[in-house]
Length: 220
Image (cartoon, rainbow, N blue to C red; front, top):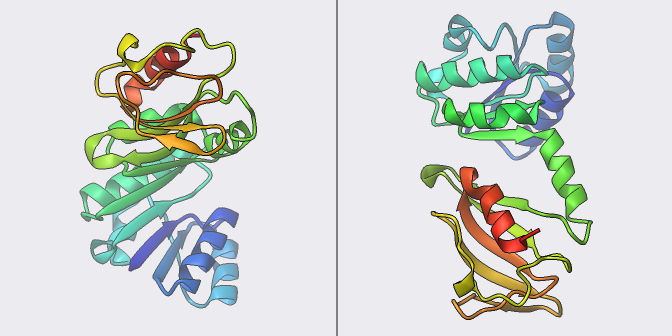
């Protein structure tokens, strides 16, 4: 694949090196001359000095044939603009944006960015998986349908313990897919399945219904 990486900082550098190791054709777009020169010295002549937010720059590097554009600068607004220009002017099939402020994630998705990566959320979710009562973990985003697969753990203090799925009012667009119980007993829930403390519920929901689903299952 031909992949354009906007931003040649540490994230862009290590990402580019990994993509090259996998055999992809990669071009980095970087504003800073010294940074661009450093990348070219270490990885070959793969860095173009320019502004990845500008259509003229993206046109010069052949963005119209790119399979993917990944914007990983340290500025959310630059990453948003680069992805939007790549998608809407050059018809790049897949755009990925790094975001530093998690509050921008919803905006980026509404504006058509295919994938957003928030380092803050990634770190938080890794921390939460180590905690016995982490409330909700994102497992997968299904971009085409606007749905997400999440994991919700039922804590000992949940008021829904002992209730069946029949008694719960799940938010619209949400469905329970799997119950993982301590001891490795997994089952597809039915309307008669009752919740137990420690259950890990794998569910399909929408971004807007996440909090409602969490409250419905935990009741705390």
